[in-house]
Image 1 (cartoon, rainbow, N blue to C red):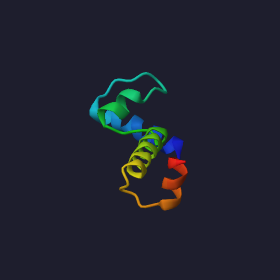
Image 2 (spheres, rainbow, N blue to C red):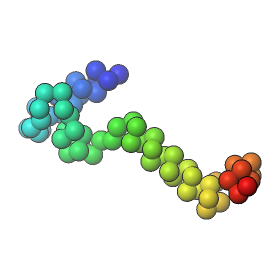
Image 3 (cartoon, helix red, strand yellow):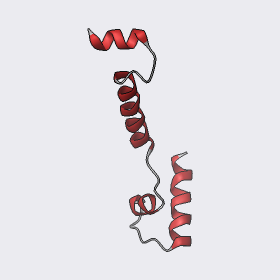
Length: 68
């Protein structure tokens, strides 16, 4: 899967004339507003915790665990 991402980034950079060094696709990802899976996971984890604490997500077991 990672190879496909690199191939897509290489194709997009050549099509959109985005300069980047070899094997560094950060400029391409930034320009296309793409986030890594790790960044997305981190963001979703923070959003989930925020929803638990603000009681938007109804999970009595987790809420009781956090309050103790």
